[in-house]
Amino acid sequence: MDRNYHVFSDGRLERSDDTLRLVPDDGGEKQYIPIENAEAFFLHGQIDFNTRLMSFLNDRTVALHVFGWEDYYSGSVMPKRGQTSGKTVVNQVRAYEDSQHRRQLAAAIVRGSIHNMRTNVVYYNGRDHDLDDIIEELEAAAARVDKELPVDELLGTEATARKAYYRSFNEILPSEFQLSQREYNPPPNEINSLISFGNSLVYANCVSAIRATALDPTISYLHEPGERRYSLSLDLADLFKPVLADRVLFRLVNRNQISDTDFETELGSCLLNESGRKTYTKAFEETLERTVEHPTLNRKVSYQYLMRLEAYKLKKHLLTGEEYDPFQRWW
Figure: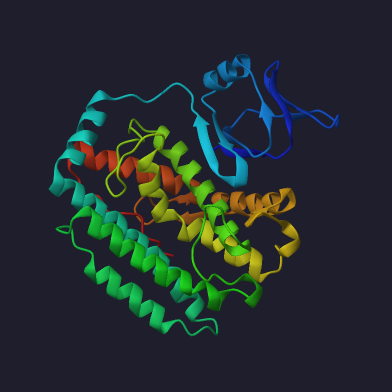
C-alpha cells in the first residue's frame, strides 16, 4: 500500500516540478514531500493551495483530507475517479432501497463492530483488569443483533454496546484519563479529544479505501445517508475504530507517550496540540503499516489494506450476491 503524509505546519502547499513543496508561514525552511507512492495527504495546519496543485494531485490519484478547527475532519478533495461502474452504483442503491437487504448489511456491520470492541476488552481482561461484566454486556448486545431488526434498532444496539465498551476505558487507562461519558462537540477533556481525533483518522482512511473502488461513499446501510458526509465511510469506520484508533490510544496513554502537556484547553474544549497530534499520527501510521497473515488470501496484508479489502468485499457482495462477512479481528 502507498503511504499517508500528515502536514501540521501553517503555510502553503504547492507543486514544485514533480514533487510537493511546503512553504511555512513562519519563514522556516521549505520542505519537499515526495509524491511517489503517496496514498493521501492529511492537512492539520492552515494550508493554502491552488488549482495547479490540485491538478497535479489528481493526475497522481492522491487525495487531500482536511482537518479544521478542533481537529474535526472537514472534508476531502478526491482525485477524479479512476474506478467507475454504473452497475456497482445501481446495485448499491438497490440494496439500500430493499429494506430487507439493507437490514442484512446493517446487522452485519453491527455484528462486526461489537466483535472488534469485545476483542479489545478480552485482551485487557487477561492483563490484571476485571472486565468480565463488560464482556457479558457486549455478548448480550451481540446476541440481540438480528438481520430482521429495523435499522434504527440496530443502531441502538450498537450504541448500547459502545457505551458499555467505553466504560472499560476507565479500567484500562490511568486515573487521569477517565471517560465519564463520550462527548465530542467539542471534546471537553483529554480522553474524549483522543477518541475524536483517532476516529476522524479512521474515517478519512475509509474514505480513501472506498474511493479506490467503484462504490459511492454517500450510499450507506447502517448510517442514514445525509448531506455533506460520506455515510458509507461511517459504516466501515465502525468496524475499524476499535482495532486502529482505540488500540493506538491505549498504547500511547499507558506507555506515557502522551500526557496532559500534549493538550490545550480553551473555553470548555480540550484538543491535542501540535506535539500531541504528531505523536498520535506517528503511532497511527505505524499501526496502519503493520501486517497480518490473511486467512483466505494466504499472504500478509497491512492494516491499511484491510480497509480497502472491506470495501472490495462489499462491492463483490453487491455485484455477485456473495455473502458479506464483515471484518472481525481474527488475530
